[in-house]
Image 1 (spheres, rainbow, N blue to C red):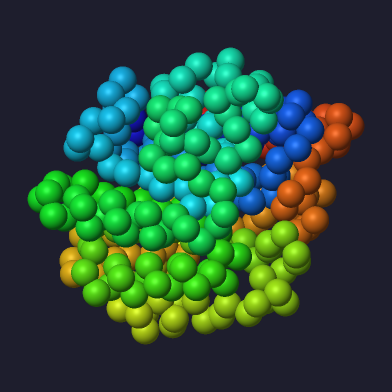
Image 2: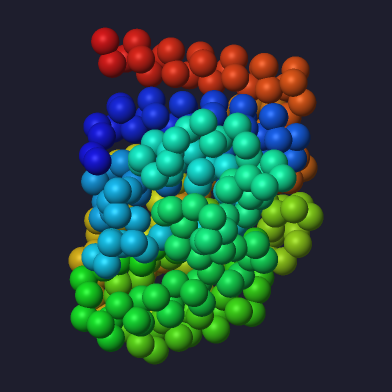
Length: 283
């Protein structure tokens, strides 16, 4: 599926609204990060980048998507419903006992999920294994690994970075949601990360830095990553946590917090206004 830029913008607002509704009903979950990363996932699945078939979720020639930051589950679930993997009716069961939509994605419960995730810092190692396996099988498939910036603190991440470079995994693209927050505060206060670009370059990766809310930049970076050879690629996407809801934006306390009913009503009002603006521009 390939949407126009304006259609992608419109869809991104709908997905944000769905996430607010899901999280408010669940009364637990993560809010700021998923709201800020909507454009990244929307561009990958609906911008003509990703090779997938929801009718054949285990298709051998599909591209693989690894979610290392599994607390972005509400966003992943909303994306997969729009992609056609399962009915949107399931979204209202987020985090319910016995639901397929657990707080962190489970590979065994839902189509379209490649790995189970929970503790951050593990996804890139899993993605490296997939990319190496696909190389050995001579398959022309890409592996995309979404990571948070907070998990760049994890030693396991850098072991995977070295391994990907050693084996020249040019079928691997990592995407770092560089929103500068984690559960304990701002990343540069908890454990300074900069310069991330220079660190990855020193490990032999090709680095692309983009505005994580600009669909043109995102799609251009995804497409460019496919034409870079001998090196793995990392896209450092600068995003605003809580994007679209003014009282959540840049507030690290919203990392693992959800709106109450009144806050949700205000959030949905703001998002409706944004969507109305986009729709008027389409006319």
